[in-house]
Image (cartoon, rainbow, N blue to C red):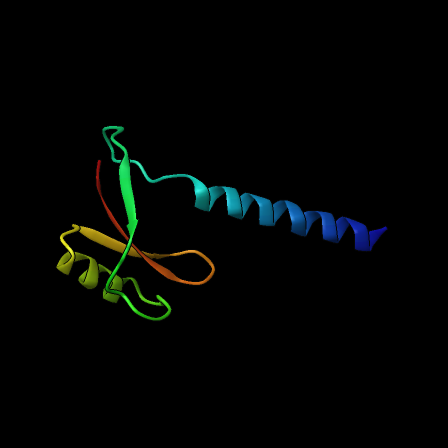
Amino acid sequence: MERFSRLASAVVILMLVLLATEMGPMLADGAKICESPSNAFKGLCLGDDNCDIICKTEGFPNGNCKGFLGKCICTKPC
C-alpha cells in the first residue's frame, strides 16, 4: 500500500509540472507572449544566455530553453 501511495504522489507531481510548463507566459498587462522555436540554435539548449543571444540575432527580444529535450524558444509580445 505504501508503494502505491508513493507512485500516486509521483504521478500527481509529474502532472502538475507538465501542466505548469504548458501554460503560456503572460505580460503584466495581460498581453500574450508569442513563442517560436529558434531556427539558428543547434544542439541541446542548456543555458538561457546562449538561447537569448541567438534569438536576438533572429529579431526576437528574448529567448529561453524549454522542455525536456532543451529546445531554444524565442519569445515576443503578440
